Length: 280
Ligand code: C2E
Ligand code: MG
Ligand code: MG
Ligand code: MG
Image (cartoon, rainbow, N blue to C red):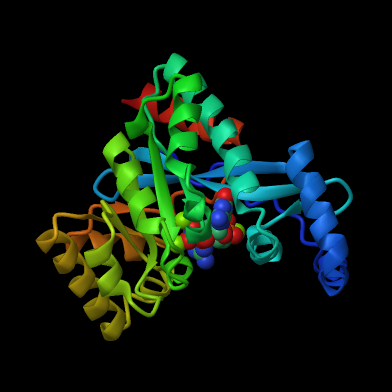
């Protein structure tokens, strides 16, 4: 397997962004320009089999290619996107790029899936699933190549329509993941209420799993729950080989984290695939 390709080559311009956030109108205006001019780009972080390190798919994580401030991480603008109701614009822009990336990989013989993050607010749009389905048809992507992750925290607001849209997406054959599991207020009831296929254990439960009995016990309980509910479980934030070993010994099968790779640009992700397929 391949390891640590590329880097997290993100420039931090905290001061500049702090100034922008104090003037939220300006940030909103800049976000609208970003949405219309295609300044949002996906970075890709591999998901891998703990047993072999083989890449099973990628998660698309948005970066804002800001014209003057450089490449910005979502922590600086995701909340503003949601607050200004631009989530769907962001989603469409990322989705189009990943659909194109999937068709490139498909032509190269790499049958991968890509997972896109979505805020629950986006599902309030009555035609959300229809728009996703049209996009996939247009780019000749099969529905099982797209996964959608929804964070627990965004489900708290109980937007109308979320359940219905998730069910429609699931009927289309799109896999759904509950992201940051265990950090929200109603983790267990979300599993009961919505049709998720995957649980992603939040990285805060993995960060010290090799030494911390509490983290170990929590992760064990989530793995048992996933088993009992027939849901796949993915551990987020695996940073060391030791963490991978501990998780693997516990029966966790899939993971993500800096240990294998940070989120990287599309060409580095392609290189990882080329390397993996040429080794096999
Ligand atoms: P997330 O979906 O839970 O993604 C995981 C975050 O953890 C990513 O941060 C990733 O870079 C980081 N990460 C991955 N492996 C490790 C590790 O081993 N250690 C540590 N410490 N961190 C790790 P990032 O890219 O800054 O994204 C932050 C959050 O922004 C995401 O959390 C997601 O909730 C949100 N986000 C990202 N892209 C999108 C998007 O296109 N749409 C929406 N609505 N939200 C997005
Ligand atoms: Mg990051
Ligand atoms: Mg995610
Ligand atoms: Mg997460």
